[in-house]
Image (cartoon, rainbow, N blue to C red):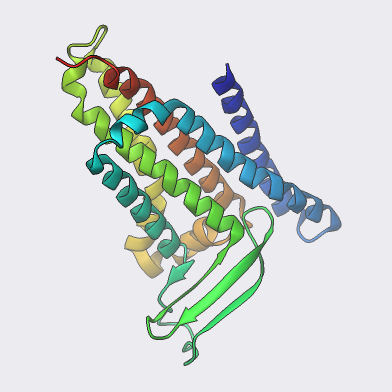
Length: 256
């Protein structure tokens, strides 16, 4: 019952995320849009907390068992780090300077200011390290988003690989069918891979996808950008739930 309520609340908040983004895009710079920005301070963290709570609510027992093996703990952290690294690089949050841009300053710096996205104006840190030839800008909002997506991706990959490894045990489990495993596997794989498709497209196509990247990945005020973020949250959460439902009963079966 509690999980259903969390799922309903998550659906409502993700829907609100899209509606507020649409309203902001349509209203432009008017007094009313600042009211919707205030809502963003509540909608964004609440959506992420609910997504993590729902996924972990289904997967907590399985993850505790799986993390008894260092191998699965490593899989979780590697998947989370790779996804977060790919996300921040392809969106330009942290990346080397563009060759077509003006030359960066010779001296490094770290400055703070406020910037928009997602949905609200957040405190932002911008930095440039000439010795590493690396710079970027990360806000509180994007930091929360990237961290949450990385955790969800780590959970998805861990549970998906556990589903694959334990498939032979399911053959001895009551009610096992090949169709049920295939359905679980395909759904979980889709939920793992889809959030990485758009960053990979941007990375592979490079400058040829500049307009696409600007619209979907880089411009936080666009409705398309927020649709992508909400889709990622929904897919990764649902993927963790689907995988957890299948693997939990399997892990709790007596061995032998």
